[in-house]
Every structure is written in C-alpha cells, then in structure tokens.
Image (cartoon, rainbow, N blue to C red):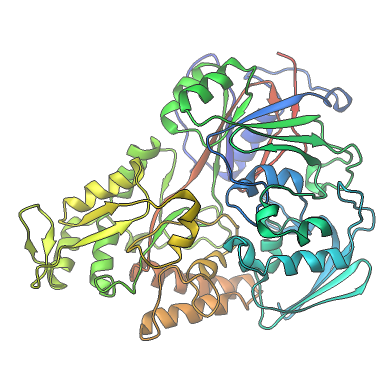
Length: 544
C-alpha cells in the first residue's frame, strides 16, 4: 500500500493510511502524473529519456547483491536484476517476467518456461542452466537468510530444455512463487552466481534495466542504463529501456546534510527512509512526500523462549501487554507508522487481526509478573524474584524507538538493557540466541514470512522454540502446514490460528506496521513502489 503527496500551496493535514483503497489508488495515479500540485500537460514518452537521478542513502549498504546483504533488495539490487515472476501490488497476483508461463503440481513441483530473448549485461543469455545455477548458489554459507529461505527444501532442479527449468521440493512450498518475485532471488549471470559470497557483495551482473558501473564503499554506487533492455513486466505498460541514463546512490549519513541536499535539488533529488520529524520541513520546501506500508510483517521483536525467565509464558505476556503501541507510534514516527494489530502487516494479503492480544494493559502485566514470582521490587525499581535475580533483558539495538519501550517497561519494574552488536555481526548475533529479545521484520507479501521467521522444522526459529514446548510445537506444525496449502481460504484459516498462538503466547512482540517515507523533488516522476521495493524502470526527470 502506498500513498503520495505532492507539494501544495497550503499545508494540508496528515492523512492516514486507513483511507480506502480506491481513494489511495486515485491519489497515487494523479500524483505520479505530474511534478506539482497543479495540473500540467502530460509529457510525451519520447521526451522522457535522459538525465541522472541522484539518490541519498543514510548508510553504506555493505554491498550490492540482495542475496548477500540486507536492504539493497529495495534499492540497488532491484534495479540491477529481474525476477522469474512479478508480484502485482494492485491485484496481488503473480505475473510473468523472465518466465513467460509456469505450472504448479501439488505446490511441490514448479515448471517454468523462460523468455528466449533475455541477456545479462555481460552478453550471456538467460537459460534454464543459469537459473539452476542461481538457485544452487543461494544454498551456501554467507548467503543472507532471506535469500536462503527461498530455496530451502529443494529436492532437485531439472533442465529438460534450454528454456525450461523444473524445481521439485521435498515437501509442498506454497510461497515459492511470491518469494521468487523478490530481489533476494533476482536472477544473475552464471559468472555472478559462481562468485564467492564476499565477491558478490561488491559485484553483480544481472538482466535488469541498469548495470553496475561503479561501487565505491561509503561514497557512491553508480548505475547506467542498458540500451538493449526490453523485457519489463506488463505492469509497467511499456517496453524498451529505462528512461533515466544514470542513477547515482550517494552515501550521506548526516540527516541535516542529506535533507539539505535534496531540498537544494542539485546534489540529490530523492531520499529514502525519511525520519517523520523532518516531513514538515521537507514538504514546506516543496518536496513530494510518499508513504509506503510494509506488506509483510512490520517491526517485530522475537522473544527468546530458551531464556530461563522467558520460558514462562506469563512473563512474555506481561511484556506484550506492557507496550503502549499507540504512544510508540506517536513518539517514534509522529503517527506515520501504524500500531501493530497482529504479526502480519495490514498490507499483507493474509493479514490476521490479533489486536485483542495486543492491548496495552499495564495492570494485567503487573498481575502476570506477580503470579510468575516477580512480585518484589529492588531499590532501583526493578523487580526481583525470591532468589534475588533482577528482571532484566538484553536487546540488540539502542535508538529512540527502543528507548520508548525501555521507558514503558521500566514503569512495570522491567529493565531493558540496550546493547547493540557491531553492524557486521548483527545478523549472526540475532540468530545466536545470546539476546533475550531481538528485532526483525520481513518484506515479502506472503504469510510464509511467519514460517521463515519462527518455523522450527524449516525456518529461522527466531523465538528459539524448544522440543518440550507443546504450544511452540503446535505453532510450528501450523507454520509448516500453511506452506503446503494453495487454496487461499483454507490457508487463511491456518494462518489465523498460527498468528493467534504467536501473539497470545507472546513468541513475538509485534510493534508497528512500518511506513517508509520518501521525499523527492517535483521534477522526479514515476518511481514506483511494489511493496517496499523501488522500481526505477519508469522513473523520469522533468525540467524545473
């Protein structure tokens, strides 16, 4: 779900994401057709090509390949690679891209027919053998968990002809097509697929509308247009190369410098992940503000149930009811995010409302903690048990958002120690179990993100569910089962039950449905979000 606001003469009140879908679509279409709040004559397609779009990033992405590093799936990697299939954000349907058609047997055997006219930037052709090599390259150490999960469980990959590839899973995998639409599984050349993981961080050769010209860590990433590109999804309603000649991502960590650059419009014309506190300033300067809701999970905090204290469901439930999510959204995002009402985002096609288990009820939290044996309070205001142990938990981040929850829990006698690891160690540390509570979110618009995050038999088991946890094992059964069911209504029932267990027994603490805020000059047109992915294929620049 996305909304767009073009600059207007008078400051308008912030409009909420709860607007009806029809109104949102109308606003997006009208806003994207012009560079200002007033009507103007449409620019002919032949007058759109050319120009350099400069995009500001707040941090070094640590690479360019979404299969290896996080976050570049929505930016650089999406412009460099195409996927076998395309997820239509309006219809929620899977449509052709590099694959022209496919068949699915029992959610277990997927057969794809490939386009026969696709090439990579190095000039080599897309073939079934290249796709096979791509999938095999994702199943090795060093590949990011979001990519590795996509190919988990593959039994065999067959290539019966040059442009037909068949993927057989040991067990049904209903989420496979949606997962393939993401940049994590963007198809790369045989040369790229064969590279050691550490080299894939620095280089990527895809079949996308742009190719990698330069990657200078901590400075910039330069993409150039492929003049021979001619296989965009039908969703974009045209063929041929991208309009932009060049895209330059510039790493500018300081908010004030980055904001000033995009307001000036020369050094930057577009910035991502705008802090809500700057929106008024940017909008007053004449920039366009776009809001896009994560279609997967939102921000969530997995709870480490292997922890001696957090094995007790009463303690976990006390944490759940001790979070004032409405206050959190106001303080952290100025109300742009939505308070979570379940483990899936409201924009997920299989959203499940579990808000009754997410009420803010500090008195209930206190009662649960008392019942769990944490009824005494030490001189520092933190609860202790009969053995004198303090009710204290470690968390791997230390920012304004985490400090809000830290303050809310302190009122209940709970200490939250904010102890972030080094950035390079973060992903490994989050999966190690050394933290009592962690953070995560997913961005694939399918309920299987819950299995990917919390599944035990297959999945990341981010809640560290033990074999003797009967409720946890029932949860895992449901998470595995939903990925075997193709029929939407039957799958929704399973997802609903799993979502309830996740939240009611507090294996995860859903916090907010994230809203990505983009800000850009009115001269920038038609940057299209698909979920949180940014598509630059139709983007173009007009004169001031």
